[in-house]
Length: 234
Image 1 (cartoon, rainbow, N blue to C red):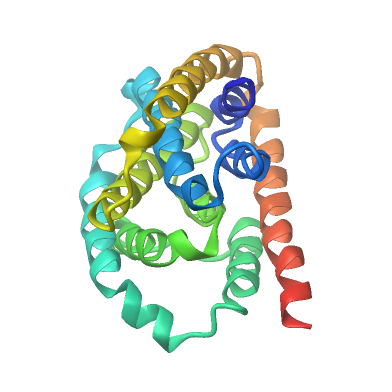
Image 2: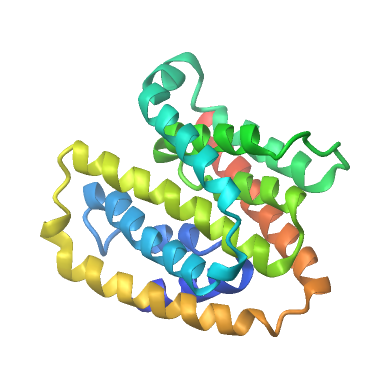
């Protein structure tokens, strides 16, 4: 619960970076088979509460394309996984994140709905197996709007939708969340409190500095995805 609170507060300030350290602390405390489902439920509460605390900044135009893409990803995830080499996928994703974050690419045309639909497809279809997938969406959103609160809140929106779809998938697969109800309940309360604290602390991070720290955090998470995959390929 303490780890859930601290990581959620961190994500409340920077918009991401809470889920990865939390899941690395769960082995040995939570049974192996329950780590991903419990983590998904906890992150649903963390991202959902962060979005609600900043509801004025929610861009509703992002929601429908992401959900449509997410449903497609849930249906076609098996075909996607069979068609690609998952050993290389985290490395490729990490490289794409670095390119999107640092290179002056042309802005996407239209309202960005297609990009959000593709992001939803990726998050749902592949995210359950690859692990931390949030940085790619954060990098895409940062190209659409660089304003601090908009970026943090809408990153929370799309991640909350992603974790909701994952929770529903685990329910369909027969995972019993009720067996871990006390743990899940305690962690959900902790992350909601962390979101509240992080939201209050975010105002003290200047908008000018925020862009630097946000891009630095995205870069660190992308490099982490690349580096932890290299030993598996050797």
